[in-house]
Image (cartoon, rainbow, N blue to C red; front, top):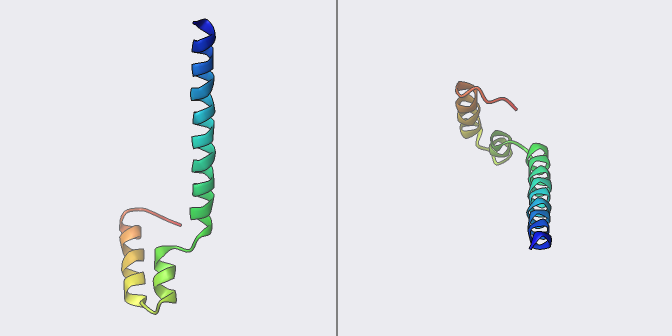
Length: 63
């Protein structure tokens, strides 16, 4: 029984490390990608880009 508990704990810990590593990869990918405002600029939508920048500034979000 004690061996089963130890195995269960190890499984949970391994899963936690996997989830944490996946989260780190996603965060790095998002940090490297262009902002929504920049994508709007690229598509030729400067008004939408400016609106997005204004919304983020009002909410105190910086990039």
